[in-house]
Image (tube, rainbow, N blue to C red; front, top):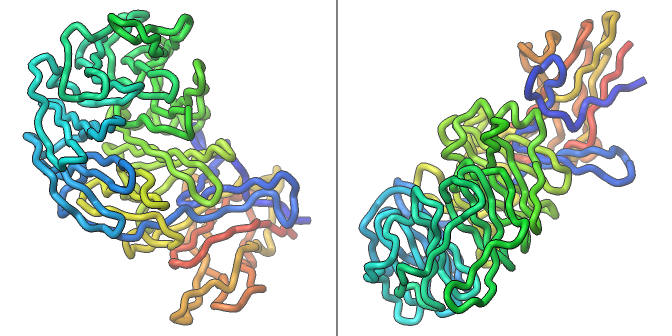
Length: 464
């Protein structure tokens, strides 16, 4: 008889209940079991594409075939080959910026002290001179011909003149009216805009009215607020994901907004984890990789990063190196057929790649499996792991998998043991660990730190 180790759980409240976790691995669940119904695969690695220096990029947007970037106080563009060209300066040099583009060839930037308009045709950047513009706005959206900004510490939002971000009217504003909370930011959601407040969400659409075009949709209100301004990301054509908070009930959770409804995509175990973090500075972005759509959520204060997989509804940790440091990426966007990210502490710009290192630093792939337990001691003769073997590197090295064991419910772990996963061409290799001993409650941690392909098809325990 054999017992499978892999499962879909996640440790949150107690490792005695489940110690399961995944780090830098996502899960495929096959509709029909073949060799195994569950398999584990590596996240994308990061390859350096360009560098802006030793401080992080503040914001980026893609318009056509050009990426526009704000780094320190400089606004510029990046070509598809990584060539950087400065196009102007801002009055600030730190902090995230909001960016949006309209159909009239303008890119707008907000930094909390001023607004800026870049005209693509003339390659000129100027500060918005209109005295009726809200200089304190920190974010900007574009929808139906209008740039839209929030007025901080109020429930008000303002719109620009049609197709012109340089012209603003002090009377062209409205107020999120259902709940007495402040507005955090406005987000374009294709056919409508979302007013994301401290305690509530409102759906508004463009009615075409002559005095002010936007109006709240009847019934378009949800009693959940935005916890972290920069956690908002688009997932597909008309779906938004973000870190939300229900202040009446307490606690933060991750939600997905589709249509005029939202669903909670964080499970209780994951919510137990993140409610132990500082969440107000969380950041997020979405990407696709190997047929899966992911939402990466970073918690800078606690130096942690997680990914949500829409294909399986599972959360997995993502980290840098072999020690579990937070993932390097802070901002991410699609560009020129690839996906590019910016480092959270340096000016490095990366591109997602099928590699097993981040900018040359190998990262660990790790999975902690299910409890194997009984009321009587279990003696385990061997553990065998089926993986895509024979993928050693060109140097001829023999890549290893390690295992460590917990017999106390996942609280402490023994010394690592290693087994080969095969040099290049050793396709029939299995990682086998023998004579493991006796225990009432077994939990197993498998790790690969060598920078080679990680495809874990299954792992099983053979007791005596």
